[in-house]
Image 1 (tube, each protein chain N blue to C red):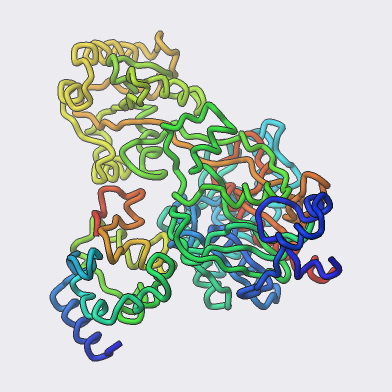
Image 2 (cartoon, one colour; image 1 turned 90 degrees about the horizontal axis):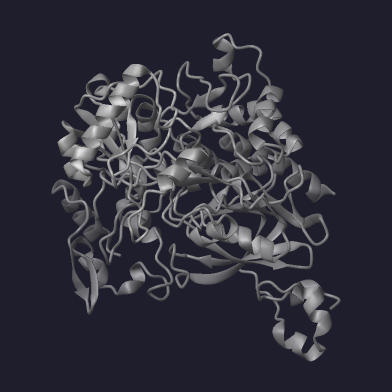
Length: 505
Length: 122
C-alpha cells in the first residue's frame, strides 16, 4: 500500500480505506489493478455550458497548460446554448446610459435574498454579484453582442439590470466562449460520458470516461481513463431532465411535466459525485414554469405568448369549457390548478388560453407562435370547441359570462385582477398549456472558492470543484431570472483563481 | 481514399442541390446513403475506426465535406433565415455532424428537439 496511486480501485462507490480494511489482503489484491491512464491533462472540465466554457477559458488564461472539456452530447453548450440569453449585470454600461445609477451588486443580492426565502447563501450570491462586471467583460472580450440600448427589469428584480444577447439565446455566448477557447488552446471533446471518478481517498485523481458515447445509449463507445493532474471541475448543469430523480426529490413533479432544458440535463455526474461523498443540498428545490406549451419543445415561445394570454385573455379547461384559475396568480398556484385538468386515465387534458387576434396580429410573440404552430388563429368559439373537443355550449356560456366580468372589472369566480382583461370577441389566438420543469436550485455543496464538500468530513474533496447549476444551496428556494448565466460565467472566473492558488499550495 | 473521386462526387452533390443521399440497402442489412456508396466499397473502417457500435466520429465526414461552417445549405429551404443549421445561433461550429445526420437511419436533427415544425427527418 506504500504506493497507493498504482493500486487504485476501479469499481465505483466503495472507498478504498473502509472496504480495504475489512477485507483480507488477498481479496484486496484481486480486486485492485493498476490503472493504465490513456492520457493526462492538468484540468478536466465536465460539461460545456456557460460554467464549463467560462472555467475552461479562464483556467487557460491563468497559465494552466492543458485544459480538457468533456461534453457527453453531440453539441457544445449544454442547456446554456438554448437558454434565453438574459444576463443580470448591476452597473452595466447600457444601464448607466439609461441613467440608472443607483444599482449595485448589493442591490442584486437584496433581491435574491427575498426570492431565496431564507434558504439562499448570501456570501456566495455576494461573491457572484461582485464579479458581474468581470463576467460582462469576459463576454464582450470574446465578441458576444448584446442588444443595443436594451436593459430591462425582469421578474423579482428591483432595478432594470438585465441585458439580453443579440438573438435572445445563450448560444450567442456559448459559441463565442467556445471559439475563444479553441483559439487559446482549450481542448474540447464531444460524446465523452463520465462513467466514474477515480479516487484516492478524499482526492480525485482522474475520470473513467466512455469515449464516442452516443446519448442516451450507455452501451455505445468504449472506456478510457483520463488522469487529472491539478483539477476536475464539475460544470455538468442541473438534473431537470432526469424524470426519476426529480420525482424522488419532489413527488409533486408529475412525470407528465415536460422540461425546458436540453436533453442532456440528466445529472448523472452529480450522482457520481454524491456516491464519492459529495454533499447534496436542496435537491428538492426545483423551479417549474406554469407557462409551458405541450406543442413545442424546450423553453419555446409559450412563455412570451402567455404574457398576452394571462393579462388580456382567459384560460379554459377542455373538460368542461370553464375557467378554472386566476390567470394572474403566481407560478405555483397556477401550476397546481393547471395540473388538475386530467382525463379519467390521468393523462393531461391540456387547458387552452385564448385572446383576441386583431389587436396583436403583428406582435412578434403572436407571429412566431402561429408560424411555428404552437398556437392557432381560430375565428369563432365553435371552431375552438371543435378543434379542442370542448363542449361548445358551455364554452360560449363561459366566454359570455367572462366578458361580463371584464366589463364590470371584477372577477367573482377567481378574484383575478381585471385591469388589463379584454372582452373576447374573436377571431382568437389559441394555445395549449402545461407546466414545465425549469431549474434545479439544489445540487452539490461547495465552499465559496468552488471546492466540492465531502459530507462525511465536511471538508473539500481534493482537486474536485463544481460551478453552475450542478451546485446547490446558492439561490435558496427560488432563483431569479437572468442570474444563472451570471453565476456560471462568474464562477468560471472564481474557480480558475482557486485552482491556481490550490495548485501552488 | 481516392481524392479525385471525392472531389468529383462532392461537385456532383453540390451542383445537383442534393443534401444527403437517399437511404438504401447498402451492405447486407445495413442501410446507407447513395452518395456514400464508394465508401462502402472500402469496408466500414473508413468511418468506424474499431467495431461498428464503438467508433464513428466527425473526422470522416470533415475529410470530404469540410468544416461545418463551410458546407453550403440551400437557404430557400429554411423556415426563417436564422434557422441555418450549419451556422446555428446555438452551436455554430460547436456541433458534431452526428447531431443532425445519421448515415444508417433517418434522423431528426438536434434543432427539432425544440423547433419541431422547422426541421423534418433527414
